Length: 80
Image 1 (cartoon, one colour):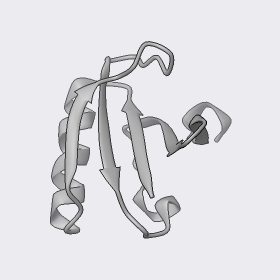
Image 2 (cartoon, rainbow, N blue to C red; image 1 turned 60 degrees about the vertical axis):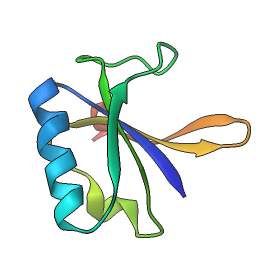
Image 3 (cartoon, rainbow, N blue to C red; image 1 turned 30 degrees about the vertical axis):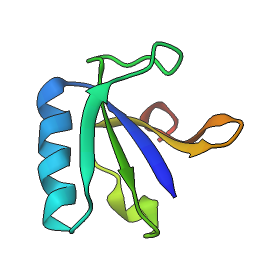
């Protein structure tokens, strides 16, 4: 499955990228699509079959699952 994570800060996105790399997950940092919005404007796009609840971080603002119909919100830090 493919995901886009958004972050509160640019440094949080960079730190998250390093974390996923240590887990063997390829990740690409990219500008967040305007429709998803973000505090910092940088997102991380990655693919994994792992349980993404274990991949959340304090730096993460939102996590979206990319589906054929668009993106579906699967985590929002504001709801926690």
